[in-house]
Amino acid sequence: MNPTTPQGAPAAHGPGASITRADLKVGMEIHVELCTRSKMFSRAPNPAHASNFEAPPNTLIDATVLALPGALPVPNRAALEMAIAVGLALRCHLSPVTKWDRKSYFYPDLPKAYQISQYDMPVCFDGAFDVPAVDDTGLPDFSRPGTRIGIIRAHLEEDAGKLLHETPGGHALDGSIADYNRAGTPLLEIVTQPDFTSAQQAVVFARLLRQLCRFLGVTEGVMQQGHMRFEPNINCLLSLADGRTVATPVVEVKNLNSFKSLRGAIEHELAEQPRRWLADGRVFGPGTKTTRGWDDAAGVTFVQREKEDAHDYRYFPDPDLTPVRITDEWRSRVEASLPALPLARLRTYTRDHGLSIKEAFSLVDERALSDLYEHATDAMVLCGTDRARAARLAANLLLQQGGKRANERGVPIHALGIGAGSLAGLGMLRDSGAVGNQAVEELFDAACTMTQTAADLRLAATDARDALHALARQRGLLTVRDDASLAAWIDTVLAAHPKAAEDLRAGKVQAAGRLVGEVMKLSAGAADAKTVREEILRRCGQ
Image (cartoon, rainbow, N blue to C red; front, top):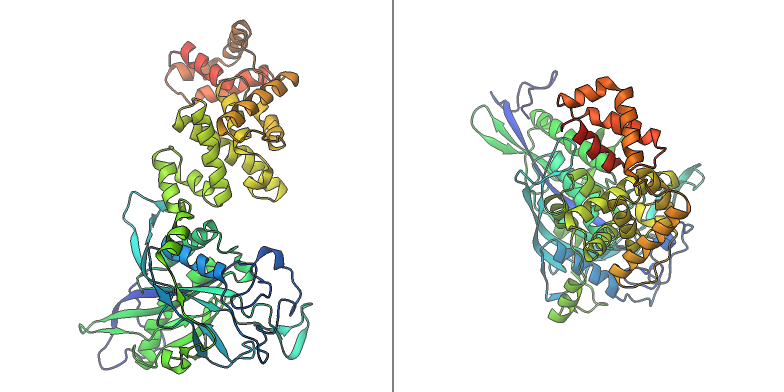
């Protein structure tokens, strides 16, 4: 960006000063609500768990959440294991011993007037995440170098409650009411180095981090419910015409829960911070950081308050909680439970399976879908299908047939009910040419209702293939294998469409598509499209 002096502002701050360049510098704090069954330090139900999404206000509370006298906190082991899993996935070091600290500040939705957090001994620290370059559509592009984002730390703490300024029915209040359901929710705060140099980088990282956390099963990741909140820390390095470089004060934009608002807030600050410096000359330094909110409708940030420094929170070790020792055995057990991660799967699907990046990215959107795809591919390979061919068959069935039904029914593809064996059986049946695309449309629904009795993937796939073949025979869906009938259909179509046939003979291979379509129409879908195409190309010298 090379901003010019805004109209109506001082010519520059200081004699002769003007900005020739503004370079963006962004770090992020990401708050991830963990989906454990209970809260961070109590047995009260956790609102971030799917079973509690619709809980009425102030029903997910207990004495510990409300800080009643005598109530003592007990750490949630599952939350610690989730934090360790995320830390390992982000290539962090783990603290052999981690402890809990009190972060003191008053706010009406914080019952204790302090938050249990971690200060100098977080669970995870010193990691890195490689953000790939992206293409024009925002999808990863592994052919170009990406950017390594440093992870300073990932620490556990408890979330605060929520202040409501209107009733659940939308009626305005004279004051505010407090809902303590969210108070005590386990929160993993991930803090990055200021390594982002564009809003796009930050958004790509945010999307991939959400995907990673959902893949690990540590959060539901519903942005509208605040399961992930992004807080970019933004400033600019301004190059001046006189050769000086100055840094603007850091602005932290709070509680962004959409990728659109994250991008908008960063781009707005990149445009505004040079103008603010021209107006007031404030530069980066102690006590200059401010927090701002984001007005999505207006597309602007607005001042909330001056930002406290760490010493303002009066951190000290929580006397009610003992330190936690993370043993090598504990670490190894969590590490062994980690699945192959989304970016690694993306590379495999595009490099080894021959899928497009768009297809591969769709398959890793949900871990259950990715696992279904891989298991079905493995099942076909066990039955003798080439892996690249098996991968293509499984991907096509899931994204085309499955994607269509998922959109119609408003459910994820993996929730349609089709098992890996049934998917593999249908893929092999189609690959054999026994059924055509129109038959697959009908057989996919049948495959979604099949019960897989064989635990062995190869047996499950062959059983499903045989059952679907029998069903196709019963319903008259098997392709016609009679060479005479096929030849007659092709003869009729070539005679009826001489221009398309001539184009094909002249090398315009795309003309084959129309001819194949006409044969399929003439045969009422009984012909095998693959065989028809091969025969038409052979006859036309292609």
